[in-house]
Length: 83
Image (cartoon, rainbow, N blue to C red; front, side, top):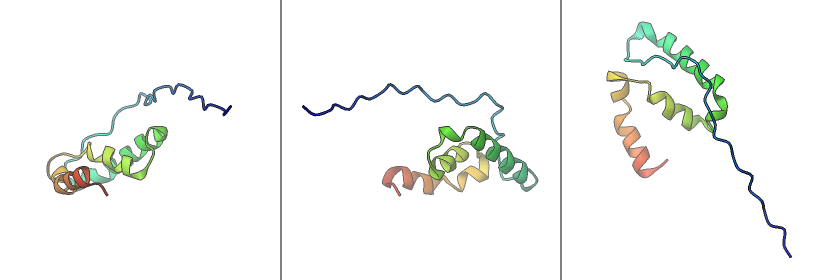
């Protein structure tokens, strides 16, 4: 008789309750602040992001205006066709 693998239930991952990073809209004087705050957020919640790709995708969610538009076509291509 073979040993059966028992899968333990996995508790849902809960992000720590901290202020969310600000949205960034390509104002150069706000770039350093945005990058620092997103980096802090990603590091505090590092268990929620399994790869650099997940961190990049999450960061794109916090872009708006011209900063976001730079990623529209590359992201559509990636989400449709994969890496």
